[in-house]
Image (cartoon, rainbow, N blue to C red):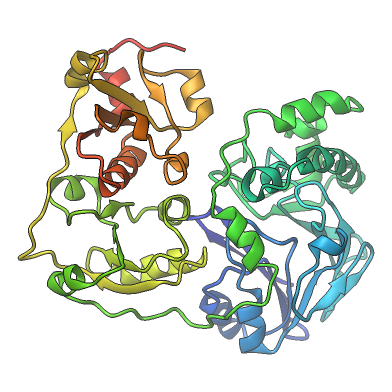
Length: 459
């Protein structure tokens, strides 16, 4: 048996390439959209991708299953569980509880594990030449290392009221199926630490059924469903708004993108002459603060680029991306993984342009200004972060809520923006400036700097 995990650190998303070396056949589970990764693995290991599967209709990334199927001719194997509202709307081989996918001398048995979503399935792998006992289980967003999938995403991101209670009950039942598996079975989940699909995901890439039964909080409640439900639904991170679009695009027939696009590089003067475009500046926040194009939004090219682009940008916006030279393909890959395909061009040289500086303040200035009548200290971190500890007098408004709820009630005041370490603050500050707020100040050091300077905090 051949096995390789493909891990996208930008979305904390795992996909899997599993092959039978005797038959040179392989299956890819939960493929990301830039499919050349899997084609290269197949080429290097003399394998044919003959099967493609998904564990559920994903919310946090645009799956590349259909792109991979078009290029390879492989068959698509997708869940037909969950009822009429949870059916994929394009041709595929439907899977139900007990269905078996055969890949050479390997087999994957389908276990219906609803809870995170109604159609969610897990795939139990057997390597028959070695043993008839199961070896691995691919759980998708059902069981993670140290956590389980949240059932409130459909309600939080897609507005499907009442689904989180149903999902919690289904999850409780699904966990009984998982707990009945042999303790030695390896667990390979769909996400790791940093994903918004749970609240306590571990950084270790895999686990075992036995270890999760000992360590994972979800298995510590016994038959106490109410205690389990209350813990499961409490303090979940905010659900990114782009999740609703991913749910739709992963379910319906849509245009396919089988290669990573090669976007043109244009001059800054050409970019400034373009109308109806959004300027996305992906440079480091320090460089952005020193000088940037008017009305550009700073979302740095780090592992959170796709996440915050999904929060702050609309899918109908045409993007011109300001980037460090040589980073164009990397950025394109990150954006295409969440279906942001409206990149029109890159700008890598700002020479000759009239640049603006960000108004940056330090801890002493924040302390001196924050309690004035004409000033608001805006904490844009998540609600749980703010609840745990914050700067006295700070007002909380989560950064992801700004596109739908601009703080127009404080537009006439000086607004100091802060987060935890400064990354989200520069996103929020640049976004508000683009929206016409002209008294924005960025506390670049943010909460970590505040504590480092020994300033008081409150809970």
